[in-house]
Image (cartoon, rainbow, N blue to C red; front, side):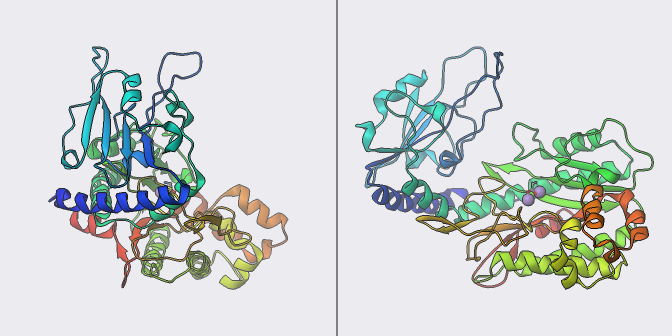
Length: 442
Ligand code: GLY
Ligand code: MN
Ligand code: MN
């Protein structure tokens, strides 16, 4: 894959970050923005670290995901500073000396011990908005996470810069490599674990770097929404395969789901095709001014239309939505914002001064309630599942007649279907970031 000119894109991104920080500081009444990259933590009664997770507020500025005990400092009107932790250490590989498209824009101070940062941080600490986890506290610099500052910055993170979009597109290409390898492994009859390994190997990332735990589900396991068990033995037969797996690129996530049938001429494949067509249409709904809540409700109706066509439900899509039957088959939200975090911030934000837009009643898992605007990137991930626990509820709630249970039985062994892409809202048509990556890898 050819790489865009990240150097040029980054300069504009940094200018945007500085502007946002200036406004955030003025709202909070602070003089400096101070962002620790985060620290490493021991596991309880042990001397092993939890996997290090960089502070998202830090990687928003810098494409650095592996430098704990470092700091970003921004003071309006001044050149930004990076305090870069590069210890003398023969136990671990230490971070490489700073390099890449970001270095020319910062004054960089190398420190060898975490506490050396104290002398370099702006004074007094009380004039700093310090954004981070409590464990990053150093001397007087305990993260205070002022709401006015955090609310503003998180809200603005909804609007991805061209630099961020370029990184997110690369994260799509990486994940698609894995998805191709995983499908091939499924068709060879491999176990979930072996498929997972094929995915990680093709992407070149494992749990430490992937944006979330891979969901690799064969047969009925597709009905467990967050199935992360990775069975070591392949089922016989291996009928169906649901994979929800992403990749990271300089701290930006992709989050992609595909579902496959072993029998490409069977009814389950036909249902996958129907969900796939519907998903593409839903993605086209990602347009400026559209309420994501409405997209979610429309997705219920479209999915129930598919179940009606396949004879699984006996009532209209509207009736299925009304009675809660649709929520038994599609029990999660249509999607969420994505960017530096797989479930990115501000999905419910009412404004850049706080406030929360509630979920529609009856839809407790929706993670995005805002009206779409250019620059936002969301996932579109409709699904249809055959989940015993939820279908039992349908029976108990007096809606058993709405469902053809023999048809449910015929689909149960396949688990479920989910198709998930990232879609960017623009001034015009929706920009699906995921589909072109699959097309390019075909
Ligand atoms: N992979 C988690 C999600 O789709 O939200
Ligand atoms: Mn998702
Ligand atoms: Mn996903």
